[in-house]
Amino acid sequence: MSTAKTRVEPVQTQLRGEILSGVVVPGSKLPLAEIAGRLQASVGVVREALIRLTSEGLVVAEPQLGFRVAAVSEKDLHELIDTRLVVECEAFRSAIAHGSVDWESDVIGAYHRLHRIERDSEGERNKDAWVSAHRAFHETLLAGCPNRRLVAVAMSLRDAAELYRSASVTVMTAEDEARRDAEHIALRDAATARDLVRGPELLGEHIRMTARYFDGIA
Image (cartoon, rainbow, N blue to C red; front, side, top):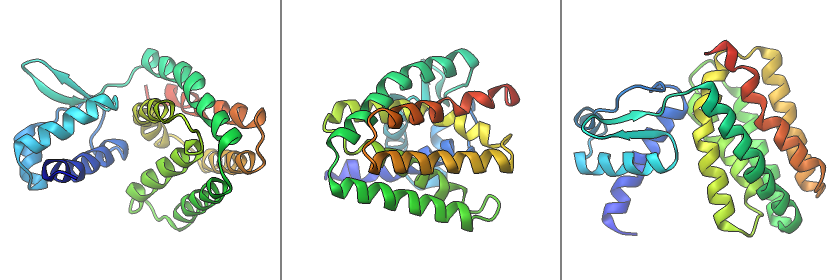
């Protein structure tokens, strides 16, 4: 791994976490010098990290104005959902068809880690850990798919949609959170049961979940 890549990745990870956890809100500016000082990195490293985040759909580069967190809108949300229903559900179907026994174990483990964080979480203290575990669970669901490009596109779309998921969490009730956990359990079980029909259907229902709460945050 090159030295430049080693320097950029921690900054990229930190900024992604801040965006996805809602610490930096959609539409807000991302001043290079301020971020560089706060993260003790060079401006060049911060710029490269932000450029990478634009490819994930989390950051927008504006000529002469710099970078800002991508804004959210109802139209963009539904376009994301429609695209994810095609790409992510197909990647999951392929994972169910081709994933190994080790993949099944990884899915069970990823769900267990996510559930433990949800169970042990107190307020906002573990929000970053939950965001990371939630992403890891969904990435693991797709990891059995042998088409790496398909998985990469699916995860890129999913990262872009995380802006909406993060906002929707603020209006979710305890009942909503229980339903979300039940959906995760169903996805885990469909993966390990190798259910090629029900698995993608369940994921489609889960993907649509964020849209249920958008009216509450718009």
